[in-house]
Image (cartoon, rainbow, N blue to C red):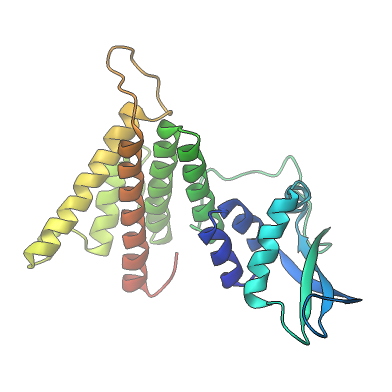
Length: 254
């Protein structure tokens, strides 16, 4: 699926649709009926996907399909002597395997994929809209923790079962040379020291306020939206920097 189509859906805050379309291939069904532009023809969009994605596509509303068509119009606008995309049909890709219940699911992720990152961000955005600030903080922390573990696993750096978020970040920081003492420039020292403080804060706020732990009635303070957004935005900034630093050091994407 072309990036421009996915980028449009993300821009429209429909990360859920971007995740679905990322898993699809497509072709056109051109009819003999004239379209909206001169000498254009009404054309259908055929989406092919695995059976799980197909079932989700079947549940989309009319408005959802219209947004998908709008995204495709970025690449295929309604013009003279061209196709006019007007409807969508979904099909199961016969080359894709059908999932079986007894397939073993690994308890770690070998790669931070586009799908996984977008899926986590979509969960965060949805929980923010639902005012589930504790849950949004949990998902943002999960994204950071998974990214740290992925970097260490790809570099065959040992991960202990006792490694918390702070220890994981220290190991990644050593590998990527993000320790403030590695820099002479004071401004870099301050920024990288700030990153470490943010990771500590994310770890602590998650332990105290996320939905992953039981709450003590006397000690629990309910997160407000601006606190949740501060935590989430800080997490995203660190993740973006780690992606860039990893590629700069290894020449590879995660």
